[in-house]
Amino acid sequence: MIEAVADRLEGAPRQLRRRRSDEFEARAVAEALEQGAGVSAIARRLGIHPSQLFGWRRAVLDARQVSTEPARCQIAAASTGEAVIEVVIG
Image 1 (tube, rainbow, N blue to C red):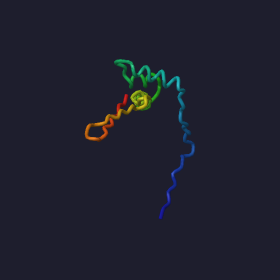
Image 2: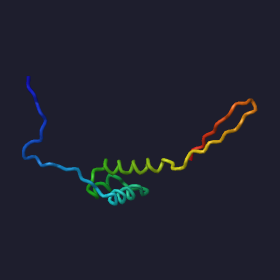
Image 3: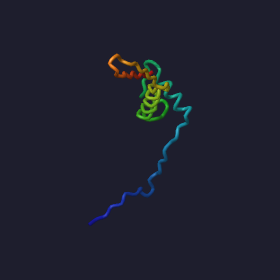
Image 4: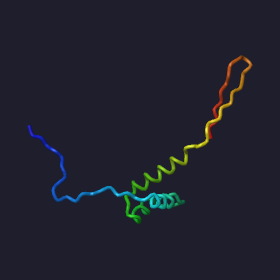
């Protein structure tokens, strides 16, 4: 039986994850959200991978869709004695 252990090759450069500033991400996303903007071209110009910019943009768009307003409920009594609950969101 042969046992293989995955390890980093000797002499191979160690690549650390880059951490972009929130300001950099915000400026990149704002530019990507402009009408007619090409996300891949913007990413190439900024020196980042297009999938990274697409991910940042998706996170912003998803956050915009979440409503911060609490849901309102209305209860109306029906003539048959049953209650109807109407939930209004947004």
